[in-house]
Image (cartoon, rainbow, N blue to C red; front, side, top):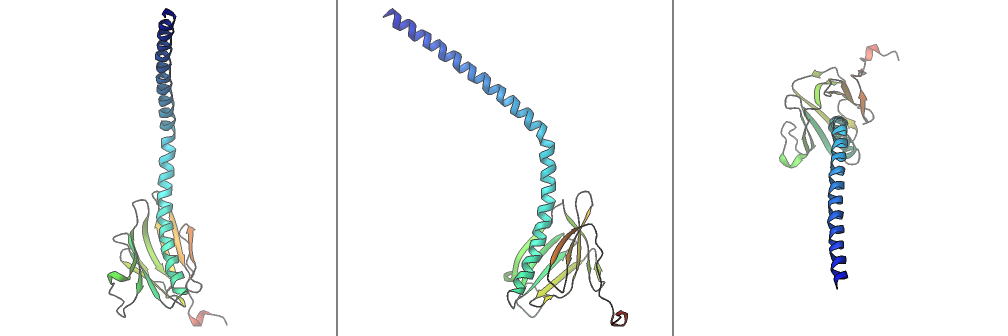
Length: 191
């Protein structure tokens, strides 16, 4: 009987020592993980900052492509309205003959640019330009009514251009403030 009691006491001591060892391991692991997280944080925030600009600009390009694709596949007309003062954009399906009136049921996308991405200016392919008003791009089955470019700036104020070609409905994202090819007057065309 004495032997059983000694064995039981010995087992309790091993259990207590084992519990203390796992607590020490846990503390060491937490300290190591904290150090790794502290080292990785600047890189992580840099990636999130870049991703946010890319996400904003990709959402905008997707909205423009959604309008072009929707119009190409149907007889519907769409309009993307860019409000430079509010740094916002909206996609709507045009259903009423009054183009200046936007009905609530027409709105498909209503979004704001974040502080990581903002519109600098909009230039149409008829040489019309705005940097503080409202720009409207309409698209129907035959393509964009006007082509142009929307110049967006990132946090470092580096320009990126979203280019719309009225002839082929393609929406392109290009780095920099690209040159927009304007149509020539009939008297300037050689043939």
